[in-house]
Length: 263
Image (tube, rainbow, N blue to C red):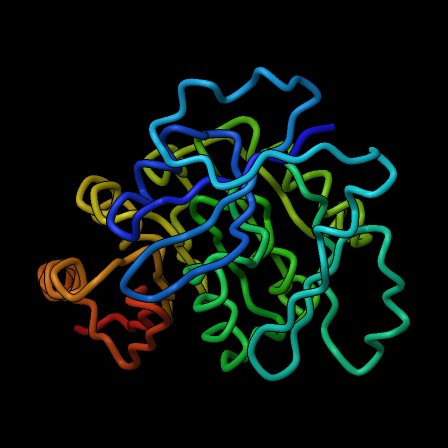
């Protein structure tokens, strides 16, 4: 097994997601500079034509690769662990078991953490929740564990749907989370959801926010908004669709926004 570590300038992170659609590990981040990302392969010759600077290539025994995936604490009471970690160590936390895989959303990225922090402040008991762009399913898992009565996780990427299903099974939530390969416009149910969460990108929000808005019953949580320029544009989009931002949080120039519907 080989581990490739690349440097990605801060402004090119979204390019990296497009270049590696199956996902990657964010190893380190320095504000104002960029990210170190890691990819894994059985073949030494893989990733030869990657448009990012190779920092390190190392070979290690397959049995040792798990050491690169450590528990991640988010917010006040959330911990994200890989399947082999003993969850009993975290009995006082809400434990989310995430299998390292193809889909974006392990909890390492700022936008995932921002959504979790805002969800942690939300009363999810007996709420109907829609997770748009579910990725690994991490946000759906949290909502289900916090007592949501119904969780629908949708993504246009079939890999994301598969990863969400697998992670739901690992957490014993396979009967609590419904998954669907779909975009918001594909959802024909008339009854809005109490909570809608969407961790997308600004260019996607430009196209699909109009389809998300009718699904919002009480509250929406958004993230995937990068730097002030995108935040300003997104806030203008919210105003256009009669959504009122009630809280904005930030981490490393990424933003999470909580919004409610206005008359």
